[in-house]
Amino acid sequence: MSQQSYQDSVQRFLFKELNIRGQHIQMQESWQAMIKDRHYPEVIIKLLGELTAMSVLMANGMKHEGRITLQIQGTGPITLLVVDVTHDLKVRGVAKTNQEITNEANIDELLGDGQILMTLENTQTQHHFQSYVPREGDSISHAFETFLSQSEQLPSKVWLAADENSLGGVMIQKMPETDGHDEDGWERVLQITTTVKDEELIGLPAEELLHRLFHEELIELFDSDAVTYECPQDKERVEVMLKSLGEDEVRKLLEEQGEIVIHNEMCNFHMRFNKEDIDQLFKEEASTVQ
Image (tube, rainbow, N blue to C red; front, side, top):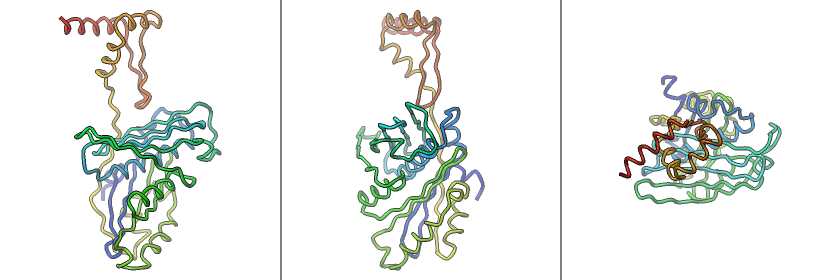
């Protein structure tokens, strides 16, 4: 398996003799691109990384074109965590804070009573489905273990880790027929997986990690799916927004500020419009109207 194939990918696997299914995720280049120039403290990197890993695991294998969005609007120092993943595993995300954060704070102190909102969007039918993921336990992984175990009626366990260079995770799910294959199989796999270390989740490709943990089990590892960071600078969308404000309002802003600067927080870029840009923008609009 080549290095690039596992650096930014999600991969399904199956314990063939136990009928336990799982997924492994690892992101490096795409994760570094997502947090570049954000200057997040370590504790935000950890939380946003874990939410990103969980979002990709949830989006992998979507049956329709669309996206999944996981969002936490908190009442603590972290006011927003949001990650957006499309059906073809293009990911973007951001964290917002309202005060300086120390790395000693725990998840409850950081988020207050903020809840996890999951939105599933089907772009083919324009249908949206939303549900809350109860924030049970002391981590992102604990919350989703409970949610998946209840919503899918499949006992689920999740291990997640993230630092500024990489993120990783493993999810396993017990299928209805598992006990019929080996009544001790699920507990055996759980006990072994609990020994996994953060540096192994972050640093090892799926094949190596699974072999290290489960060399006595028969595992089928399926083809990996690439995960990419994508947050395009949609200038046309910004121009439509400016036009919707009206020429008088836009020129008033331009006069007050010298230039109009639009900051896209999700993608962390600035788009600047000077007088010539605004003249051209409304000149084009006038010609379109005529």
